[in-house]
Image (cartoon, rainbow, N blue to C red; front, top):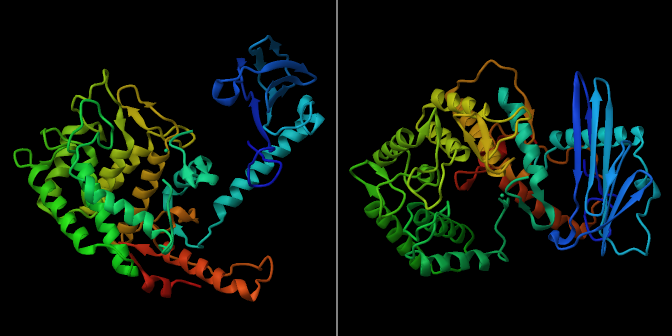
Length: 484
C-alpha cells in the first residue's frame, strides 16, 4: 500500500510508504528477500547503512528505508534475508522513500527507520481497504449499471485501471499501457485535433509497421488505413457538430479515398476476408475492429465472412492469436486476450449473444485468482504471458461486459441472478447502460460563489454529455428520463 504523506499530489519532497504483509495460514514456508535499490533509472548505486529497524539506502537526493522485525544480512550493494515461517506467523515489511533535498540526516520521521509496529501496519492496511471500498462505491457522474454476475470481475478491472492511472499525465500505464476525454470538445483543443486530421491527409498513403509493430516492413496495413479513415471520420463529426473551422470538403474526399482503397486492396475475395496488409493473404485479428469502428456495418457480408475467417484461422481453444504470419521474431506468441474480447464484441454485434457470453466466461477463466488479466495466455500450459497486469486487456473485458449486457437488455433476456450496482470511473461511464444520474447528491462541501456558478455548470454539463455519449451522439432522451 502506498500512502503519500503530503496529500493527493505527489511532488518532490513527498514521503511514500509501501507495506507488505506475510501471513502464514497453514504449513511452513521458506521466505527469501532480496533488496537491490538503484536510483535515477539505475544510474546511481546507493550507499547502504544499517539502522535500528533495517537498512537505509541513500544516493544524491534519494533515500529509501527498508524496515522489518526480521534479521537482515546487509553488504555493500544488496540486502538479503532468509527465514522459515510456520502457521500463525506474521511478518511485516515497510519500504519508505523520500526524494526531497533535506539537510543531512535521514527521514522527516525517526520512526521510519525503526521496526514497523504491528498496530501501525494494520492501521495502514485498514485505511487502504477503506479508501478502495469508498472509491468503488463512488462515481463522478453518478451513472450506474447493473452488472449481474460480472460485478466482481468488473470491480477488479476498475481497480487495476485506477492503480495504473498516472494523474499528472492523465494516462494509464501499459502494465504494472488510454487517456480518455469525456465531455464537450473545447475550441482550445480543436487546433491539435485538426492538426491530426491534416497530418492524416498528407501521410495516409505511406506504409508503416502496423498496430503490432512487426518487423520486415513497412507495409500498407489494413488496420492502419482504417484508423486513418477513423481520424477523418471523427474529425468531420466534431467539426460539423460544433462548427469548428476545417477543410471539410478535402477531409470528406480523402476519407472516401481511404475507404475505397481498403475495400479494393485490403479484401481478399479468395479468403472472403480482410487481410493483414495489401501484400499478403494472411489474416489479422485487428480487422475485427472494422465494424466496431463503424467502417462497415455488422450485416455487411464482407464483415460476417471476415469474422468467421479470423475465428477459424487464428483460434486456439476459443482464444485468438493476433496473427500467424511470420513477423521476423523467433518463437511463438500466446493467444492475445484483447483480440479475443474484440471477438466477443463482434459476436454481440452479430446478435449471437449466447456465443458471446460463452466466450466471455471462457476469457474470465484466463485471469488469475485475483481477477488480473495478462497480455497473452498460453493455452497449452494454461499460463499468463507478457505484460501483467495488462491495462488494455482489462479495458477490453469491461467493454465486452457492457456491450453484452446492453444487448441482452435490449432483447429482454435478463438473467435471474442478483443484480449488483457499480459506479464505474468517469472515463468508462460513457459506455454504460441503465442510466441513473444523481445531481447534487449529498450535502455540498462549501458554498459556490456567484462568479463561479457558470464555470461549475459548464463542467457539470460536460460531464453529463460525456456520461450519456453513445453511438457518436449525446443521448439527451436518456438524460431526460434519468432519475435526477
